[in-house]
Length: 385
Image (cartoon, rainbow, N blue to C red; front, side, top):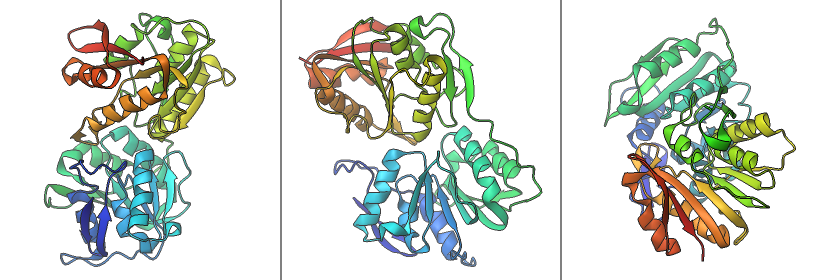
């Protein structure tokens, strides 16, 4: 846990799930910069926060916790980010009714007077969200974006300019920068170009010919990424009733391929991203219909899955949280898989060879086999004994 100093006070903040060994903070200089700007520090006029305040992409709740008395609305794609926000509000004794938590799949407020955008790593997600928010913005709306200098590019500014209105940037402070946009009500209100679909190639086993649907923000939104391609070519061949989890499902092509190969399987698609789970549902239903028996859950890995209830887990774990590289995500996914698997159940993992997942799996399961490998990727199998 770390102490965050903001113009509105001092706050104890942590990421979620809380880990005392985690050295990563729940905020950065971009959060500090935008809060100082809103408060009118550094010779600026304070921003009137008495109207409808919307905060988009607040990663761990630092912004809405500091602004809680202004009754903000938070819009987030991250389940973990939402849980961190709830925990940080409670930790700092803020009334939970002060902050409304919405996902990227929810309708935004009809009117927005102050819009604060924490620039996401994924440009498509920013594009989609600006399109969704634009109808709620009026000529007097204060629009401020914030991010680290490595996150703000010419393409970022062009999106604000094209969708919201004329845009300029601040000077950099502590490697953070602000984006100022003046809403132009005369701009055409075009629909978001997301979601997008593409068809998988004919050389990926049971996944061949699947029509994949990607909502904005999903990794490789317009094509099949090479890691998933390699996993699809090397999926386990199983028959009979199987309880299968597509863990960190992304657009759901892996779980959909499993169901196509073995229609008697029951597949649960899980991801912490609301956009991902919506994509997985759309992909599955496009190829198998809405009555094929799959389940879809936004959550913290397998936390809500009953112990010893799963036969097979398929996982392509991320190794970044925003721009920080971390092993914590894969470790939690592997440990959660072991708890959820029945005796004899299997965890199959696709990963870059250099990540060394086999070491973690042997520590947890006592075994790990290489199913397939190429110069870049390896598919591993661990069995719960």
